[in-house]
Image 1 (cartoon, rainbow over the protein chains, first blue to last red):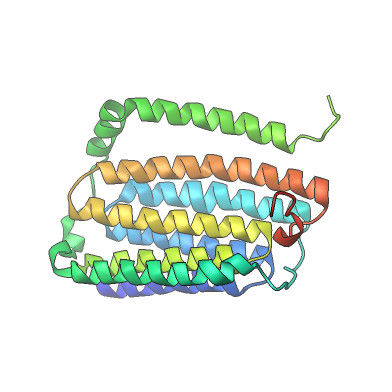
Image 2: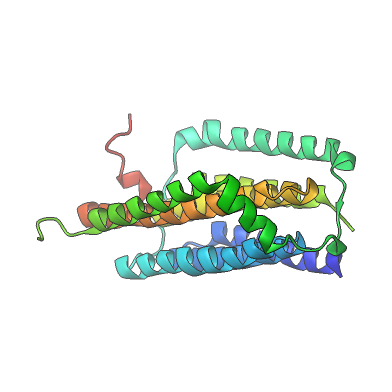
Amino acid sequence: MHLILFIIFAGFCLAGAINLLLQTHPINSALSLIVVMSSLAVLYLLLGAEFLAIAQIIVYAGAVMVLFTFVVMLLNVGEEEKTHGSKAAKIIGFPAIVAAFSVLTTVILAIQNKLGGVKLSDGVTPMTELSTVLFRDMLLPFELTSVLILVAILGAVALARKEGHR
Amino acid sequence: MIPASWYLILSAVLFSLGVIGFLIKRSLITVFMSIELMLNAVNLSFVTFAHQWHSVKGQIFVFFVMMVAAAEAAVGLAIIIAIFRARATLNVDQVDLMKL
């Protein structure tokens, strides 16, 4: 059961991510990113993080991606133009990401046995435990985040406002 | 039972795809989406480690990453709108005033 769910939604994740790269129109990329985020929410549920799964759906698949599709439609962005691309990306970027991916995979596979396994019977993280840590040990970062969001709202409004309008 | 390393490898693959998207995509909005993909990939490994070590702090960290990503998306898209007003293009090759 766990294995089937993992394979299905990991497959959705990968398919969505690859589709994001292959599509030329930004709206198609945005929709495939929604698929990736929703499948990740299911993977979070398999890992027992039910609060994060719901937050992922609401914040990422809901709010952030609605913002993305809204901007794509507002600006009426067309198909991506094909250009030769950046030279630095070809020379440094691709070798660097291949190297980083190989190192990551090698390390993960090397410590595979120590990491153990994920079982569905491990249960979900209780909300009480999560909120105790969040509102007691992490209270200062939490409050700082709320200030950050407020600043971000003001910044977004100030940046997106038309120049010269009062 | 699924090895936890599968989740971590999935996370690594998603992160690499995000970086590749960042490098090959020429539309500013899609480049921005690739950044979101990378953030999500890192979140997956955070949740996996939080599960393996029975620690709630990893999940809390993912929660903070989500909040910061939401703020980042709002400001970033506002900047994209401002760039589009000024330049009438979203091609990253044409927005290169600060490039050497």
